[in-house]
Length: 170
Image (tube, rainbow, N blue to C red; front, top):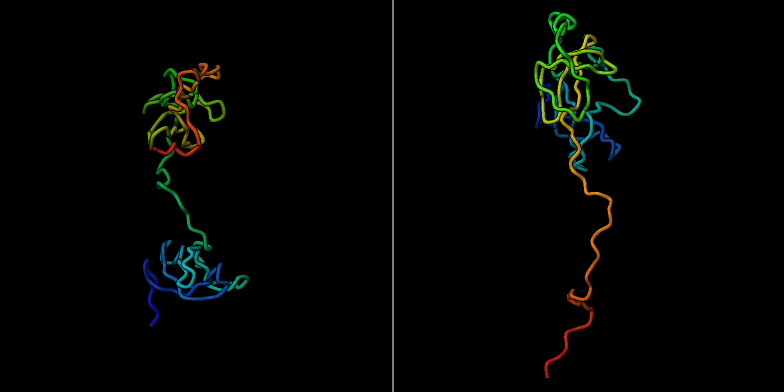
């Protein structure tokens, strides 16, 4: 009975630490194939390897063994960014500046684009004619202490610290 591997299930794989094929627990899957496994002997996690190094392993013909990893599906239609930003004022891109959705950004390398998404703190997605780009924003420098001299110490009034044991009581 040939059971399909699943996360938490068992499979035979080559361990890169033990240098042998042995029992492994499936940690992660890509489609119907284990991607990451943990060795039952040494408990190290590594990428799934079906056989010994140098051995040819059959891969699915449809994808050529490669899996497309995208966070979003490709756009169904291309949008003319130039038409969307035409006649609107643009701001020059600087990672220290804060941007909002709908603003027009002028980038020195990518050209003029439109802010479409704020996916996380200090990140902004801007759609340029070449495609969407994830850029940094709102990274203003915090006020750092200056490099001036510190205030002089007043050793006369500072408590004395010593390594010597405390005096014995009589």
